[in-house]
Image 1 (tube, rainbow, N blue to C red):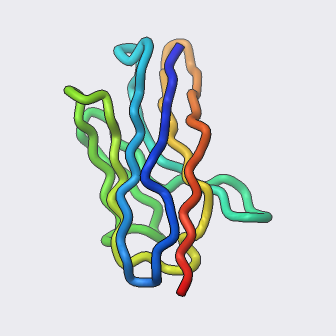
Image 2 (cartoon, rainbow, N blue to C red; image 1 turned 120 degrees about the horizontal axis):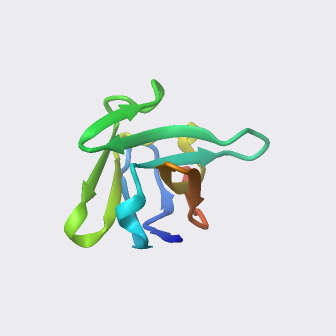
Image 3 (spheres, rainbow, N blue to C red; image 1 turned 60 degrees about the horizontal axis):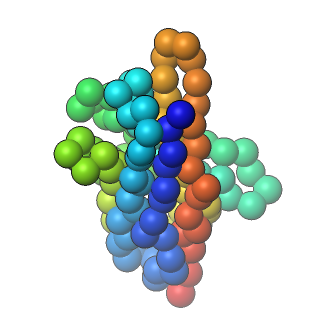
Length: 116
């Protein structure tokens, strides 16, 4: 089992920045990929960014604005969000994926609201 706890969400004005953190505990050595997803009201959950052994992947909508990183010593994954837009408003979920056997772990989510 893997437990994920997100933090760092909040209210920010357009153009502002936030950094989300995801602390992982449990059977961390079994995890292959960590990532962030988001879900806006009335919409499906969507990929924001993932990191696998240092290789990163981003949704087109956040490229050049968001940066995902991982601190293995702290068992923490970060999402640095800059130049935030109102359309970035959503609940952001941390994800940990194990490939064999395949399984997804999810955090409880943290609300990000971008509004003036």
